[in-house]
Every structure is written in C-alpha cells, then in structure tokens.
Image 1 (spheres, rainbow, N blue to C red):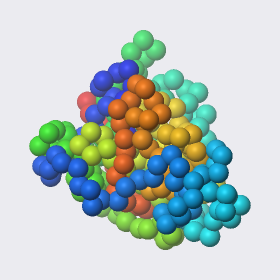
Image 2 (tube, one colour):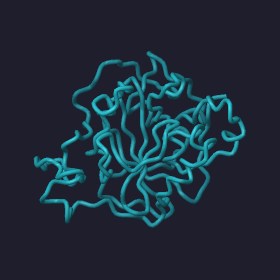
Image 3 (cartoon, rainbow, N blue to C red):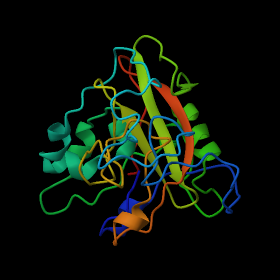
Length: 247
C-alpha cells in the first residue's frame, strides 16, 4: 500500500495488464465501521471498540488457522527506526522484508525514495491509467514475481513454511497488503506510516475481508477507500522471495 501521506510520491504503485477504469460492483467488498468480523452474515453491529458484535466478542467459531510460520507482531522493529519506517511499505511489510538497500538510500534529511512494488522484479511496467490498480492486475504481478504463492480461503491452513497475506484495493487508485501474525490477528504498514494491527475504525483486524479500510471517513487527509477484497494468499516465509523497488 501507498496510503496517502503529505508526500504525493508515496501514493503510487507499480504496473498492470487490464485497462478497465470503472468500479466493478460484483467484486467482494471489504467491511464497514460497524461490521462484525466474525462473519459476513452477522448483521449485528460491533460491540463498543471491539471487532465483534456482543454475541461474538467472547467466541467466534470462524477462525483462520495458523501454519506456525507467521511472523511475530513487532511494530517497534518498523516504527522506531526512522529509515526503516520511511523506506518500507505495506508490500515489503507483508512479506516481512527488511531491505538494507532501501535503508542505505535514505539519509536523515531525505528519505523520499520509491517503495517496493508488485511486478517490478518480473519486469512489469509502472501502473498507469491504461494499466490500473485492480485485483487481477496486481495478482498477475505477484505471481510473476513469486510463482509459488498460493491462493487460499480464510479458513484454509497455509502449507508448511508459508503464511497468509491478503490484498485489498481502492480500485484504480491504490492497493494495500495485510499480513497474518503469529497471534492470529492481522497487521499492516500504510506506506511510510507506522505498522498497526488496527483498521480505519481503530478496531483490531481479525479478518481483513471484513475489516474497515475506508480512510475517507476516518482521516480528513485521505481520500482512499480500500473497499475491494482481492484474495488471501500463502507466501513463503523461509525461502527467498523477489521484491524490487523503483530506482
């Protein structure tokens, strides 16, 4: 993700094949600020500041099983080091990549450098109006970079040595990646901002497909609404993956 910040450069992604620029209303929508994250069929509003309705807050039978290879949720590793925070985005964070080359490009007076982007490692061009940020295009880039990625459902367990990430989009505007951590919850890094395990409504992320990523309503400085859910995926955690940043 390249969540809009004060720097316009950090709003952009990488490249794509498809040319449609209209919203597809048949795509799966992400949640809203009142959505109980236990189930898409639950019509009860979230209880207080929790991620669940009152009925589900103590027990939710729908779980996303862990593979045992999920990274730990350690926001200080990313947030307390200026050069790491400023040079790594949601894409790098979801793959748990701490890139020394990115850090080396940064100095204390200027860290405004390009992020890692899907598809750059496999030769895709940058995103454009003809190559917009849509689920199919970004997924194609991911598989181009790392063909061993596996698409799964929320309730599927990832194979050994892999764990889940998820992709959501504000179609044609921006993309965002979220990852599952060893505590079972999900976390993300909005562009050069801090790592968090909460959504736009400040609720813990139990299921990124049902969480609220409409920053238009909660952040007066943002016009992003990641309202389209693309897929859950299992990505390698013990073998090398290919990620590349623009030069």
